[in-house]
Image 1 (tube, rainbow, N blue to C red):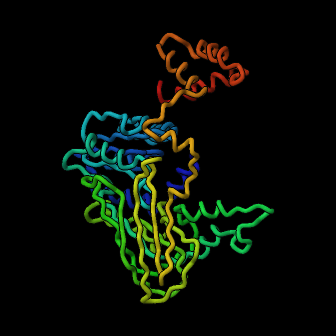
Image 2: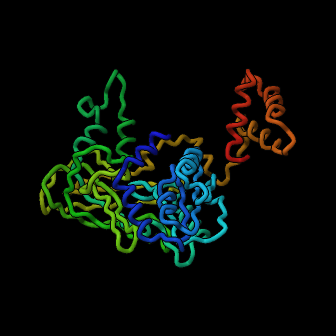
Image 3: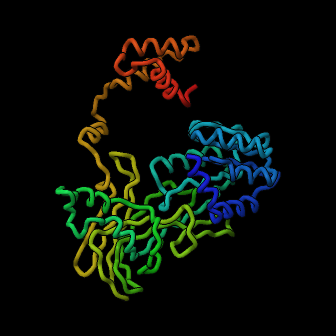
Amino acid sequence: MLTHFRELLADEIRIQAFKKAIFKVVDERTTVAEIGFALGTYSFFAAMKNAKSIHAIEMGDIFYIGTEIARQNNFYDKITFYHNHSQKVKLPEKVDYLIMEDYTPMLAYRGLYDTIIDARQRFLKPSGKFIPNTFILKFALVEYEDFYNGLHIWQKENDQVYDVNWEYTTELVFNRAHYAIKPGIKLLSKEIILSEIDMMQSNDITFKFSDDIQITKPGTLHGIIGWWDCWFTPDQYFSNSPLEPVNTWGQMYFPIRNPVKVAPKDSVKVKFSSYRSKISGEIDYLWQIRHKGNTQEYNTFAGRFYSKEMIDHQNPDYKPALNDDGKIAKIIFNRLDGKTSISDTADILQNQFPKRFPNRDKCIAKITGILKGYI
């Protein structure tokens, strides 16, 4: 966990973009909130600018490290900290600016826009803004040989390795979106705008595109590369394009299994959309490429594994019953009365689930793990 956040901290491009924006708009009259403060960097920047008030929200265990860093750097008394999900936090005031940075290369992920809309309605003044405030989703057709080869590792063997057919795994990986973590991206078309999202107004972050795209460079088409650019402030633009220096936000690669040789002025019909899955609630993507009569179509929903049981559990008519883990959690929560000790609850669990808890330490660890975030 800490290593990940230190790597983000080492991303000078990302950090300096936020610092520039915060130093531009924050002063002693400004109220600020940050969702997902982690190590606290951006809240610290607001403190350096003597913001009138700063509210830092973090639901993960990195909260404890961030608050300790605040103490050691004399920021602690300038910031109010909240250890919870933002949708469970109540601020004592509405703020001028709300800082968020936890976005995927295509911006969206499950639950993100619920968080954004909630924060917009409850945390921000009518004149308030997010930092960043406006996102422009973009994509281009791409040659990406190294990454493609990394996905299709058994192409020469026709997915037959160790006397086993691994075709199903290949089908799954080509129906998934991948962080573009390898170099060697070559754009074969101009960048295309998918949508523009104003965080203060937009109520949907899905997109839908269907059009012919002209090839501008010769090469081998390996799929689609997607990213976002943004406006941190009205006069501070930031590009996350694969043509820009590398940063930790990066881009998203949507592969095709059968590469296509293309030449300038070739026309490629592209359908590219995102949607919220009714079954899983995840943000899924669909991409289709048609060139000279040959069509390839992929869908991240098909790249996820869902058993019949998992799908059945999403049915509104499904009648759920607690499994043993649910029964254990119920026992624990029913004894949160301010009178029953963890030790007493452990006695009950060991009596009812002796095979699950052969020793007391394991039982107490289970209780404290479940109670985390609730007491």
